[in-house]
Image: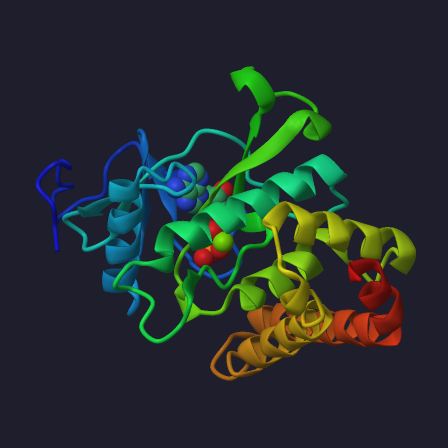
Amino acid sequence: MTRSRHPQTPNSEKSQNEVPLFGGRVTPGVVRVGDTVRRPAITASPFVAELLGHLERCGFAGAPRHLGTDGLGRDVFGHLPGWVPARFRRWSDGQVAAAGALLRAFHDATRDSGLVGRCSVVCHNDPGPNNAVFSAAGGVPLPVPVPALVPVALIDFDTAAPGEPLEDLGYMAWTWCVSSKESVPGRQAAQVRVLADAYGLDADSRSGLVDAMVDRQERNARWWRVRLDGTGAADRRRTVERIDWSERERAFTVAHREVFAAALR
Ligand SMILES: Nc1ncnc2c1ncn2[C@@H]1O[C@H](COP(=O)(O)OP(=O)(O)O)[C@@H](O)[C@H]1O
Ligand SMILES: [Mg+2]
């Protein structure tokens, strides 16, 4: 699996220049070394390597390169310059539209590959703002104010798998446009439409987008629930909070289902 074009880290010691990267919620030990990111290998690493290799060959610029593995067995990715938000927040219509177009370009790049099995595309499965790299329009150097940034790439393909576009779009609609904390369903629904339009979602699929959002909220709660056991007290508390949050978000979306559905017609 190791490809030769990346220098090896000696087995015995970590590089002196490892900078911990925070902001992730799942993977301990993600570090930056120069212009690379090192992540502990996971079961899905071979699929991720194949997927990112395919995207590279397609000329898709919205994902990191997989550069092989280092001497500690970690996956080595190219570091993408920009800003990765650690927290969810409200985004502008322009930022949401850019995210929708990015997701569409990713799906389209996978569509006719040998990676999709019987499905239509490869889904990222976690395309929240926390897994997007933002850059300033026109390549202006950072820092710039958040409203001047646009998402240009996705990272963290750990849960990528063959799937259907609505699975990712439902997750994106929820995590980029909807929050039960800001109970303004009309404004949020209008933004879900912006997302669907930017993605180029066809008329038939639009009617399934609200269900797809609810499905992803349920899947998220389930995903964290199976990780409850075997964690320490602090992790357990954070995991319980994430389950509760997913359930609140689901209840909010279901309560305003008609507002969301109407905006998509
Ligand atoms: N290829 C990359 N380019 C730039 N930053 C990255 C890259 N990969 C990871 N990061 C940074 O590391 C953090 C954690 O990585 P991530 O793969 O999202 O881990 P987790 O599985 O914990 O969510 C991200 O929030 C981001 O700031
Ligand atoms: Mg992540």
